[in-house]
Length: 127
Image (tube, rainbow, N blue to C red; front, side, top):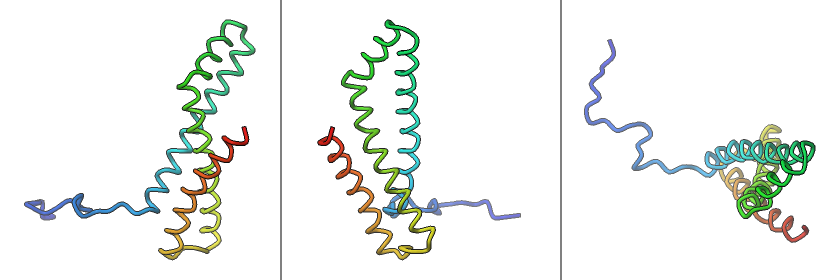
């Protein structure tokens, strides 16, 4: 039977010495932004269904979506859309076998983050 005496051994990876890598953080953010975009899509769908349901339902949905909270959600959705798109392009590049070395992967991670912020600002200015 395996030795079950765990004694004073640290967990793996040890939380005091583990440093999250940019590639793991960007991977987690890609999944989070994908799910956030589902939420934004449901909100837009609610708005369209409410418009078809009648004036009272539309007024309720429109009041929520144009409130400060709704605008904040859509601002985050604009960033999430750009981030998710750029991260997808990065994955296509990786799938082709390019940019897999650590230095290039790190640069591409920062490019995805910076590019998504830049494109979000461009989108807000253009609208």
